[in-house]
Length: 111
Image (tube, rainbow, N blue to C red):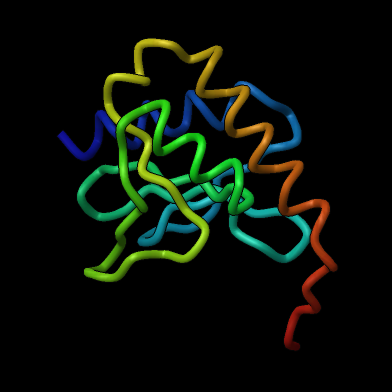
């Protein structure tokens, strides 16, 4: 079951050449020093949106905030499985998420 979710997440990430799936245990995508999507251990997908877009997304798609490892992740929404049938729409939201993190002040890496 989780393997199917991982394969779906990989197909979603592959919809855009700007996206790269990262992580081995914690599966995610990031840009500009920020994660913008994540696949949790329960096989649920979360995407990061601005506060306004997140509220609109939750309302339109009747979903909630995204939870990973027992805690709600600030700025993330849970992608309902009903959306999995519309890869084009989901890819558009992922693009919006990418654009959102690219609009933030770049996060410096600690090395």
